[in-house]
Each structure stands twice: as C-alpha cells, then as structure tokens.
Image (cartoon, rainbow, N blue to C red; front, side, top):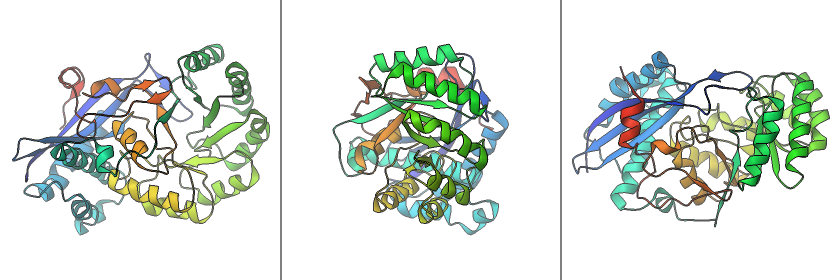
Length: 370
C-alpha cells in the first residue's frame, strides 16, 4: 500500500444553540480541519484537528498539510506510522518553523488519518488495533450543559436533565468571578445530588491567588477535578495549587508534546491527565503520554472538546483512561457517531477510527481549504 495523495479539508460546524462561551473564548462554530489520505488500494483515511473555526487560521493549518507534510508522505506505506511520525515531527526544516502550534495540529490530522487507514486495511475498529478492549464501558461526563454563557437557572435545569438522561458526570465552566462561580457550583451540586461527579473547568483564566480563594469555598461541594485552573504552561503554579487544595488538578488540552507533560508529572502538579489526540501530533504521541501517566498511576481523561471518535477508541483500549467528555457538536458529521447510551459511550464497531465524514456533512459544512 502506498500513499498517492494528501488532501486537506475544512468543515465549520455550528455549536449548541447559537453561541457558547467559557472564561476565555466565545464561539459560534467548531472547526474540523483535516486531511484525507488516499492510497493506491482505493482506501482513504481521514484525520482532523479542532479549532474555533477561524478560517484564516484554519487555512494556515491546511497550507501546512499541503505544502510541508504532504510531500513527505506521498509514496510512503501509510501503515508505517511510527516511522512517519518521526519523519514529520523530527524533520530539521520543520523544527525551525515550530515544534508546537500549526505544525503539530497539521501532524495531528495526518497521524489520525494514518491510524484510520491502518485499521481500515486490517478490517477492524481502531480499539482492536490498539490492543483490544480493556473495559466493559466508558463513562461519559456532560460538558455541553455547563458553559459560562448559560444563565444560572438554565444551568441547573440542564444539569438535572443530563442526569435524567443517564449521565453520571457533569462539568461546568468557571472563571467569571469567584462569587458568581461559587454560587453556580453550589446550585448545581444541590440540583444533581451527591452521587453525580461534578467537575469544573477554568480554561486557564485565573491566577494562583484567585484559584486559592475559589478552592476554599468550592471544596465543600465535592469537586471531581479543577481543570486548567491556571495558565496552561505554569507548572510551578499548578504544583502549588495541587498542594494547597483537596480538589484534584486536571490539565492537558493545551499541551502539544509528551515533553510538555513531563514536568507536570515530575513536579506532582497534575492529578488527572487530559491529552488531546487532535492537538498533540496525533494518537501516536498521546499513547506515549498515556503510558507515562499509567506508570505514575495517574488516571487519564482524554480531552474531547471536538467529540472525536478517536478518543472513544483510545478510552476503550488503554487501561489508564477512566472517563470521557461529551460535547456533541460534530459527532453526527461522521459515518459512525460517538454516541452515548445510558451515560456510556457505545463501543465502536466499524473498521477505522470513526473519522470518515458523511456526504451530508461534507456538502453542508465544507469551507475552502486554501
């Protein structure tokens, strides 16, 4: 099998309602920026990264796919994933451009497409290719009911409804003011009761002093984790916070490499590990992070802001993965959606990584890639 063509693509998919917001972002669409890899056997693989649907930025990623990475892939065997990952990630010319950001997002799309191709060629769902099923079920937690743009009363109503639908985990956004966020946290905890896990996510907004003040008031509500409480690269601050509060610290969606995670592990600044396949140069690098987390006996909750089926495969196959995020914006754009039934993700059955767009999504949401 040889790669004959690498074609970038962009889909812009509406979010729930007309607009959502967390502490640092406000968006109306989610960007699915990806690559379709064609082979001489007729098989095609699809992979993508996730963005805030900013078309000029998305086109920078597709330009990188087309002009920097694609020429390194044509003629190669797509099943040789490890070697191709290093060929792209350790290319001397590309390292001068950047070892994170656009080049890594581009490589994420390509790496996922290669895994998709390999699983399709073997005729198995990706989780079987990764070693098989290690757990009976993957528990879902619902984030889509918890945006800061949602009013207090609607927030509680949405959380209760999610629990009634079978979700045993809820996550809400914080990062407005300490007083407002503590009030909303208390109301949601009261609304869903003590038996549902309740996590919070600050999206890197606050400083350490604010986080410490917030955590003193939040601890009584049995918070499952505090995600991205501080600026993403502040290892020392996260370590200080982890020692000062009983609330576990979670992070990882803004880290691009296993090296970025290494110092958080070393300084005991992290309790829940949240790598993202669509950010970290693909599944190949995320598997390395999962293995390291497992060696530290730390649980993994893959970041799934884009509702990638790849994370479902990973969560069923890797022993470190414990729970997975549910945000349903783009799931129905693919031939095998990442569906949740009674609070658990359905085990994928179709060969591949679950990243093949439907013809309807291709026609409805596609944007110019250049």
